[in-house]
Length: 392
Image (cartoon, rainbow, N blue to C red; front, side, top):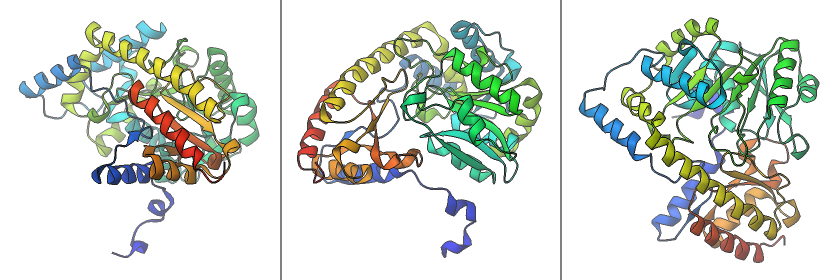
């Protein structure tokens, strides 16, 4: 069917470049090659058993129908309880919107806040789907170049520099993908104050909360009760395929969000919501904490190992499970190097092109979402690939 039949928005939305890497990796695996996966942002741990058992019980009990569009009341209360326990934030469960993954939360926010032609500021580098959701609602992402001097995060000075009359919101992420950097409480406070001065909505992606190392993450809700905050059960709770997330919104926004949810997807999966109730139990939390520690051990191995190979990683990431490495000193282009590494040594990596435009050609994202043993093998293979890299 001719491509011109598709809308302009579909043509403008770019595919994940990492999916091309993954497709190449799967093809090599089918041919019998042993691939070390350091490209996909998915924990290698299965969903904790208490959550799986709860999901199985939900199916056995017939919890397979629709739920209210905003989510099961019990789950919304449990999420509100998490904010009280983890952050000391008193949150009305009525402000919690349960969504089919964190992606659906951002889709709701985009549809709620962004008129055609309006803009949202976000850091470059950043998770690519964020800008694509804006394009879907005929809005625009303004990619603000950031670097290690600001922790790859937006600052009030950068926001004011790039702000214009068409801007309506600021989107931040803490911990951020692909850099793993956090926004501190003073930094979040400054962002919130800046947004109030500009009459901008503040949106904060907290999907990697819980996965922090040596420091506790501050929630935007600690400093800005009117912020839109999205989160997910995918990362810390290991429920990627269950497709479940949530959004905390100002109370006055909830009726409009409910209307959008009813029309866009009706509700999040019922059995996933029932299963997620077990995520807040002590047994599941103990498992998740053990896994958080395992991620920290992996980070603490991989960071110095990559630096030793010549990758420049100026900041130690405090959260998530990524290292965003500058390979400029190695010469060449990151996409070409990723291709060389998978073709010669069968290690799958993500080129920086997925995450924006600013210095993307000289960055690679390494995901430590595989075992320590496999990471050690991966570093050995990358070292061999660099020996045959023409630019070195």
